Image (cartoon, rainbow, N blue to C red; front, side):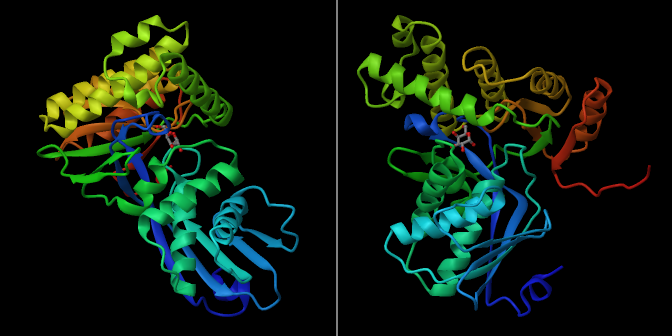
Length: 359
Ligand code: GLA
């Protein structure tokens, strides 16, 4: 069912925003650190019109679910909470937002660690900006989206996902300093591209595990007498911390250094090594991997044409990203076969391959 069929009139405007995959710099953004995401081809589209009855009406095409909001003291849950959160954050920022009809359609996989929520938030804010002619820039959109996620989805997230969805494209890597918001657009390493494969394992403990890691990092920074772990550049300094804060901090410090090394310009081989080191650090020091992700990463790392691979996003399930030589994208099919033979149900997300229905 399209907008017209749901709301009985055509949309007045629409906007899109992509999901993202992070190549390096994981769990660094809420430590004021450095990240290297890129946009993925999958996108979320939000269509809007003014509502005629004073209530917000949200419809998700993917879920075929409609939510109407009469009482703003009872925020909705699920997909509607992200849209509602964006509207509330705009109001907090001083804008008057009338009742809206909102229609969402998305090809960004949910629960794979590819920022389907950031894509929904950014597309919603872009569509409202257009409809109401608001003078908000793309960085402000990312900031409002992050606040919506924190206040209405309960994840104490950093700003990487929303900045990536708002500012990155699929042809470049976005370097972002999450403290200053200084950013640079980098090319992919020479003759390379990416593979993204979903492990098929949902990110069950993601919210609680994520918030716990964030608290641990804050505690580590406090014990070390710095504003954020970004201020530590020598991993040796973290050895004085008690377990497990020492490991959490060591991951953040070494991960930031890996991103900064890429910024200096590295070969595809070196970029791959840094991705592999990142996975080891996320597995052993940050402890956000799960056996399925380790298996998938190992298969990727042992595949010809792959320079390096790691889990991507918050961890606890979700997807892996690999850097591969251009022209070697087909390696993904082999990897998937091997992975699924180990008893998992993975799927290739990037490149977007033709889905074969042959069963
Ligand atoms: C999630 C959060 C981001 C970031 C990553 C981990 O995607 O939303 O802010 O912290 O996890 O790097």
